Structure formats: structure tokens, C-alpha cells
Amino acid sequence: MTCEWFVTGADGMLGRELVSRLKARKADIVALGHHGLDITDGDAVRAALDRYRPAVVANCAAWTDVDAAESHEAEALDVNGHGPAHLAAACRVHGTVLLHVSTDYVFSGDSDRPYWETDTPAPRTAYGRTKLVGEQAVLTALPETGHVVRTAWLYGAGGGNFVQSVIRLEAAQDALYVVDDQLGQPTWTGDVADRLILLGNCARADTAPPGVYHATNSGQATWNRLAREVFRLLGADPARVHPISSATLPRPAPRPAYSVLGHSRWSDAGVPTPRHWCYALVEAFPELRDAERRRWARHAA
Image (cartoon, rainbow, N blue to C red; front, side, top):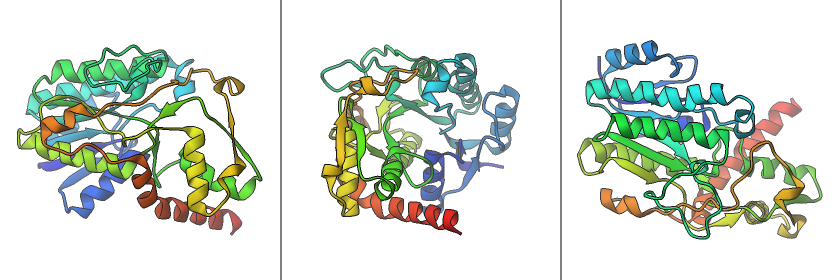
């Protein structure tokens, strides 16, 4: 048995979007969530790839609870570091392309210019450290077929995220207080999924060099700016969103003050750089709004 695409973490927000878009393209896929494949189990990973022999593996499985990782780093490392290592080892046996999704948290977050794919990582959190271990495992084991795809500030209809929280809170609160001193790139899972498909297809055609790629929407914004844009799209008054500093919301894991990623590698694959986050949000918004309306209806029933 063989397949074109093998997706891990298929029950997560990005995994669901990727599977949906692959199905729309009528791709031959095997999609497994955590209960279908635990990537921390090396024997299970090897058996799955021996069975399906995919052309491309897209690893969307991850420990994503940034704060919990501070007190559970070993568990996070098992998923974010050892899991990708198991996948890379199995992919090496079959000559399979591996697309491994990573994060901006591998950087320190204190830059004053975009982080490029070639910049040296320096994570400041347990989450970032564990994700960096996974990156290094993939790039070391698969120098010819390993692709690390970093993203950040993800939102989508397939899971809980900041944009949907703002949609929900706009209806429930007169005012919102949102941090205005963290700068990043709001990024739609739909655009990341399309990037992964493009990259996987290019890699299969030997037109996408291995290595690191950044898959965030372009431009930049603070969380406060993003919340105000969500209010505007809802037809609500953006002035109801008030700025606060990160210091007023202490968290176990420090949030990067600057998480803007550069996109220089896409030209190497002959792929245009990602579009601006505002355009992506406008396209994504009806689906996000409808997902929240369905959630409200379920709670009201």
C-alpha cells in the first residue's frame, strides 16, 4: 500500500486545514490524529511508514501548550523533539520527503528586524527549546529531503485561537484589553496549508531545496492591532479594544516581543512570498465567524 501524503496531527487546527485542502485536490492521503499515531512511539512510526510508504509526510503533531511546557519540558520534548526524530528516521529509510512544522519560538524574540531562515536560533522558553530539537533532528537525518516550516500566530476555524476568542468576546464584553507591545504576523491556517502543499509538491519534483522555510503571512501587527481589525470586520467599534502592556499579564513562558519572520527561501522553490496578513484575514473571516456562531448555537441549545 502506498499514498501520496501522510499527515500526522490531523486532528489539530493546522492538520485539519491541511487534510481538508488535500481532499479538495483529490490527493491520495492518510491522515492520523494522536489516537491514530503517537509520534513518540518509534516502533509505531516505523510500522506506519512501512505500511503506507508515502511520498510526503507532513508533521503537524506537536505539544503546543507554551506555558505548560515550562513545567513539563520532558513531556513536551518527547512530542516536539523525539517525535520528529522518529519520523525523520523512518522517512530516511524510504526516501520520503518530510515537512516538519515548527515555530517562531526557536528565536529569542528580541530582534529589531525580521528573522531570516539562516539566523541562529536562541529559544528562551521550554517550548522553543523542544521545537528546536525537532528541527535539528529533521535537518540532520534528512539533509536531502527534510524541510522545516516555521509558522506563528496561527488562527483558523479548526481549533481555539486568538481571532475566534476576539469574535466571541466582542459579543460578551463592552471593552477588551489587549497587549500592544508584542509584534508578529497573524497567519491563517489556510495559507499555511497551501504553502505546505506547494512545498511538498515542489520537493517531490526536486524544485524545492531542503532546509528551513518560513510560512507566516507577511506584514506585521500587534495583538491589539489584530483585535481591532477583527472588531472592524464584525462591524463593531475598534475603539472598544484598549492597549495594555505584556507586564500586566505575566505568564509562565515569556512571550516574544518581536516575532516577525522573513521569507527569503520561497524564491528558491519558485514560489511567491506569502501575502499580507490583512488580505488573508478578510478571506478567512466568514468561516471563522460562522464557526463561532455554530458554537453559540450549540451552547444555547
